[in-house]
Structures are given as structure tokens and as C-alpha cells.
Length: 413
Image 1 (cartoon, helix red, strand yellow):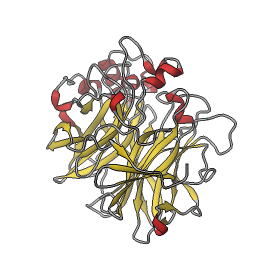
Image 2 (cartoon, one colour; image 1 turned 45 degrees about the vertical axis):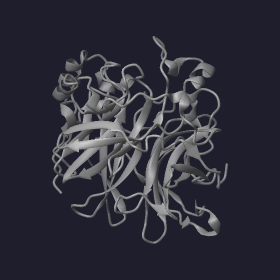
Image 3 (cartoon, helix red, strand yellow; image 1 turned 90 degrees about the horizontal axis):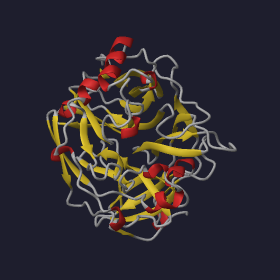
Image 4 (cartoon, one colour; image 1 turned 90 degrees about the vertical axis):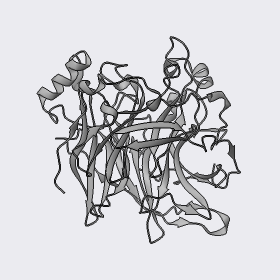
């Protein structure tokens, strides 16, 4: 595998953005969405995969994971209490809560952020996730570590759970040269550096395992000239050095993970490219990630959405889909209605219901009661993506009411 070098996502690409039905998700009535877990917020869903990329089935039910936190206080504070939850979904679209994936205190962090999971042939599940902060810290800090744990999947006695005896190991660290450490003591989501959201992928071309990671690069990664050009095209060079979002790649060989060059660099354009993942469709590698309007430079330069690139092979060369990179955006009237899109191999797209908008108000910054009243915190309607070479379109999926019902909890609180 010969790296093609990172694709540069620049202001010139963003200049090609055009509002279109093909890239706009249908409007959501957040108030009408049933909550999968009435007492908990859920966000950032991902399936447990088999090694061929398909969703794991146990007794006819799909196995999923999601971040969760008690539905209390300001929704933005959920990140300070986040833990991974295990869920099952039956063929009728009904969800079962299987409880927390891990026992309290198992993670080396003070909370658990997004990742991915794959069931192994020996009956274990490799869970890759982000350990945020440090276990036992007095207040939340923002160090991010890519961790793997490999518990057994236990399905006896009518229950589905993960064994509690597996070690949690840090498997990947930023090198400090290409990839900056994400180790701030203070900050908030959207402003901190990134080294998180490990997304597992097996390349059909070589059979090897890879991780895609939301990362921050040194400003020189794309070259100072390219960074300056991207920033000036976006409207300003002031502060552009902080906008060094990237999609990192790591490969596994002989049981050890090692960093490879980034696939995409948004040097001077965007601060974070979250939840990166790849879908191979008709011999093309489609790389997707989510980002928010306030993480662009300048803020609001482009909409919150799912963005994507495509290439003939894993390491590129990548080009932005639809010319700009935009694949799915929220409607203009509801710019924050959904987030954290994940494209499945069958091209269904899942996300979570985020905020209902109010004219002239940033709900994220409102007091807790008002923000909570306008927050979804559950599964958004499922979408369906069409990929036609470098062009995409999105529509509501027939199962778009898939979060309509829940079944009893069968795990820990």
C-alpha cells in the first residue's frame, strides 16, 4: 500500500456549496420522536459489526452501541457524564436497552466517548473507543486516548452482555509531530484538539485492519502555503492555525497499531472531522465524517452536516463528493436538528436528534431548562443514501420511524 498523500479540503471546495434537495435531509419533528430511553440521552450510535462489516445479529436482533447520559441538566453537559450503552434492535424496529457496556471504573478515563466495535470469530468483541479525561479526576479534563477492550459476548440465560473481566488498553497515541496530542485540561466540545472516535475498518484489498481517527494535525502537515490559501479563500487568515482537523489512519500489523499519514486534512478550514468511517461501494472507497457549522473557519462558513470524499483505494487519492464534500445537511430552518451521521454498508444512514432551532438564538448557549426543552437526545429518523460515482443524494428511508417504539430494559441501569 503506497500512501497517496492527504487530500486537502480547502475553501475552494466550500465555495462550490449549493443548497440542494439531493443533499438536504428531510425536516424532523423532534417533539414527536419517541425516546429510546426516556430517562437517558442517547447519541453517536454505531453497530457492532462482524468482520465482513455487516451488523452483528444475536437471535435475530441487531447489536448496537451508543453514548448515553442521564437526561438531566444542560444537554451540553452530557459529554461530561458519557458512558457507552449496549442496545439491541429487532426486525420490527423496537429497541432493547442492554445496560452499560462496561462496569463503572473499567475505563482509564472519567467518561467514554465514541468508537466502533467488531465481533471476533472467538466470540469476543473488540470495542475501540475514546477514553476522555482520567479515571477518578475531580473535574472533567479533555485528554483523549484511543482504547481497545476485548470482552466476551455472553448470550446465555436470555440476556446479552459483555463480560467484565477484559483489560482496557491504550492502543494508539498521537506522535506529536504530524498528529497533535489531545491533552487539554480545560475546554469544551468543538474547541478542543481531537484524537478520538476510532472507526474500525477491514480493507477488502489487503485484508488488514485499520482505524480511522478524528485528529488534529500540526499546521505544517499540509504545507504553510496550502493552509494560508485555504484560510484566505474561506475569508480570513486570522486564527486559521487552530483549524487543523484531519482524518488520521492507523494500521494493525502483528497485533500492534501504528500511525499512517492522514487521509484528509482541513488545514485552516475546519477544527474537527468527527466520527470518520469508510464504506466501500462499487469498488470506490467512500470516506465520511461529521462536522458542525461553528467548527469551520470562519464560523458558519458551511453547514453542520455529513461530509465525504471518495478514492479508488484506501489511501487515496481522495476527492470531495459533490465537488464540495457536502453529503447531508440539515434543513436551513433547522440547522441543528441532527448530528453524528453514520453510513452503514447498505447505505442506510443513522444519526441522533440534536436541537430544535429558535430564530436568532443559539440553543446550545441558552440556560439549561430551555436547552433541554429543545433537545432530542434519541435516534433520528433513518435516511437512505445513493452513491453514483462522485455524486450523492439522500432521502428518508422506509424505516425512518425506526425509533418509534422500545421494549423493556434487560440490562443494568
